[in-house]
Image (cartoon, rainbow, N blue to C red):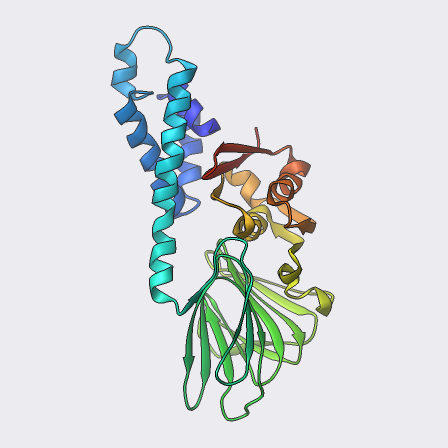
Length: 299
């Protein structure tokens, strides 16, 4: 909302334009939402370049409110596109705040986190799960003749019999092991690392930077108990996880806030309180523009 108001009040201000460019660079979804915002303001006459200069006086708060309401509706539609495409590719999907257990034909038990999607291929020489989005916890049935593989963007995890998690949130892919051993390959290359109980590995797919660490194996897949744990993770990554329990879309308006590190344990039974707790150390604010759109910003 802060970006919209700045653009509305100072359409020719270079600092405001720079903030908009940074917002749009966060993802294709952010850019699509911004383009829809501009189109809504043009259609409603709330605020746009030449039309604004032809009017006398300032645009009323009611017009701005109407424009923001229309933005929320259209932004929700713009951001739903990737979800529809993901659902078309998937064999199993979950809804917002839904955690689902699925037993595969080989006896393996999968737990899918909210707003997650997977494709499943059980072949004669390999069992492969493609994680399109979200989180999955795998309790793998032993079968030495058919390795169990979970692949997502930038990361592939392979195990024979074990319990481990793979997650895809924002621009980050992560694997963590509760029990057993898991081989990790990056970008489809040869095995890069082996994780043991408590080990985790995270890949930022945009920059290809890799982080590794150790934690309590009992906290692997903590989202099954409606908890998110963070250890110097970016706010963008943590918010992407919390947003899976949150009705409507959650966007971060400030790139600096999105990249800031955060640690802690966040209760997903109250997603709004969890979002507020994540951004509070940086003076961040949570603004509910509508039931369909929540914006986090540093002002």
